[in-house]
Length: 264
Picture (cartoon, rainbow, N blue to C red):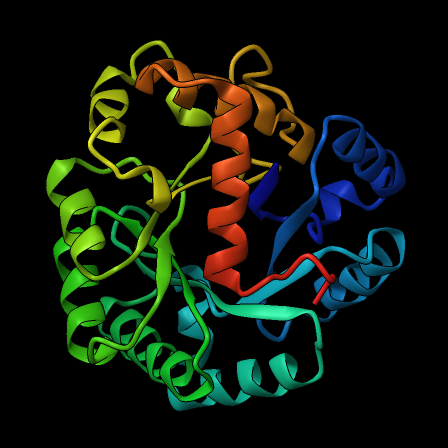
């Protein structure tokens, strides 16, 4: 199994990172994809510690829409920050998470758009996949991916909670769809129905830890070991064997992020 999206560089894991890594390995995880906020020195420091603990860890680096306002005067400077950090992080594999968030609107929407577009262009330049965050902004998110992606962009719609229209739009772009703990929630039947329409070779699973712990851990701090619960829920929704589904989704993650068995 691979947890395709987690935030192990978050300060909430600082005190027991060793134990979190041990539990993840004991749960059967091959590796994790850790999301880093571009320009966040504290996360970069913890990422270095994490890589010592778990050399198979891989990273994605980007400016989240919540932080886009930090680059209001010069959205292109967000690219400079991400580019520099990406070049200094040999284990980085993707640009993200990036996108749009109209639920919180922590950053002005025009700034979100500009920073998002700039990072999509960077991903095309570097020929790297993108990790997409979209909340109450699906139409604009897809429009920008179409306009800036040029048919060359690979990526994943992370923590997918959208409807069939969003799933179909992402799949049409060649994107993957990643499921988090929300799919285990009792009221998530609409999401489970949508997941059934996603081809097997386009599915990923994630924790988005420390957020969105799955049932039966709901309300607690999430961590990569809990991805087994999300995997079980996806398998049940699709009527598939969990072990085989886990192997397929791990292969999907390796394909998207260009991770080979040799550890590269």
